[in-house]
Image (cartoon, rainbow, N blue to C red; front, side):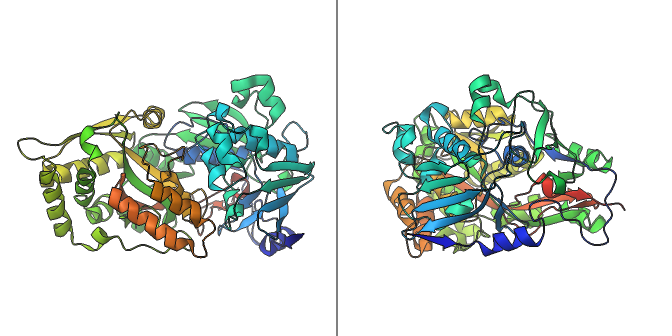
Amino acid sequence: MKKRLLLSTILSLSVAFPALAANPQPGEELSDNQVYTYRILDAIKSMDPQISTDVEGSDVLRSLFEGLYNEDGDGNLVPAVALSHDLSEDKLVYTFHLRPESKWSNGDPVTANDFVYSWQRLADPATASEYAWYLELGHVKNAADIIAGTTPVDQLGVKAIDDHTFEVTLDAPVPYFPKMLTHTSVFPINKAVVDKFGADWTKPENMVGNGAYTLKEHTLGEKVVMVRNPAYWDDAHTVITEINAVTINDENVALTRYDAGELDQTDVPTGQYPSLKEARPDEASSTPYSCSYTYVINLTEKGNPALQDVNVRKALSYAVDRQILVDKVLQAGQAPAYNWTHFAVNGFAMPEIDYAKWTQEDRDAKAAELLTAAGFGADNPLKIQLNYNTSEGHKKIAEAIAAMWKQKLGVELTLNNMEWKVHTDKMQAQDFEMGRYAWCGDYNEASTYLGLFTTTSGNNNGKYSNAEYDKLLDESSTAADPNVNYTAAEQLLANDMPMIPIYHYTKVRMNKTDIRGLPMNNVQQTWYAKDLYRVKQ
């Protein structure tokens, strides 16, 4: 027996108006120019949905591919390839009813078998996806054993009932499972294209996607160009004709190019939000953004031996004056972070972390005490190397923290700046001592943060491992109140300090005033180019 869950919000939106594409309002006249150009910080490492790991890559992939569900401007689920789903009485079997008009850019139909193939590919150890653990986090049946290499990939809990019915079986109820399905790692890809071109399938001349746009050009570290896909099921309601994502490492250069009319959106340079908001209130904005900024510590034998001491890690964390960073360096509404999960995550109860309640003077005193007890001082200064990717903001934060540690603890911090791909490759290979990192929620629930530090997480670059922590996260999915587990997990992170939480993000942007359709109320800041349009001014 299956209980039909009518996703009323989804169905009403899809019937009432074209919620999944641009929706010009009465009185708005469309511009003749429907090209959208925005700045990205770093090179897009991969155009493969099962391989990509970065936020900017996901922004691009949401235009080239489409999963079961999308998000609207408020973060609610809306239909994409799936129109709706049923859920079994035991809450273990999801049956997704796929949109029959969904097609690949070559005109072939998108079927349930495409999802079966793609999800199996994600779990397959041969793919070596850093996001394989995402299926395990979602409790997809047999995912953990397949990832571990002890069970064949065809035993994953996914099945094509027919071309337009996709069934997923879990090994435990996961109330937020549908929310997880907007992530790019579970988007479908075309098996025939992958089989034909191998690793080259993501090149513009080879790629076949099912999104609103197709890949016209990708020059690594320079730009990505996408154009309308006439085979997309809702192309008739798509307005933007071309999207250009331009890589500009320097945020000040990006602002100059924005002011010159070369960009329609860019990030506000660190520390400049107050002046830009005063001068151009209609363009500058700051809204909560579900991302947390941190310094991850390498806990493997390849890391700095001194950082294996938890008291050394705590000393470094305590000595960071987060209030100065958000008030004097960042200046755009960011919040000091003493825990990992972003404060604005839906339903999350902020834990009471003890050192968060101390004065900074008390934190500094405790930091000095701990570092001295660990054997470090004026005659034996602690020496650390910090890796960070190219960004003026990352540099300013690193320099401020280096000064804090030097002044308060005598720590000698060496700053190693490198471009994004090199930085992330080193972190994934545990070739670092301490690394600047940030995590943006894959869905609006606390497990998207806390799951990262489980032992099996593919993004646990510092290789933190705590059996009690793993158990808390595993049991949280079936707990009556998962916040009890989440609070305990956050406390373990504060006790073990495998990373130094620094601040919780806001999305700080400059947007041209003729652009419509960007989400301002979605804490995930998930956006789709097909929802955008330009108006005449």
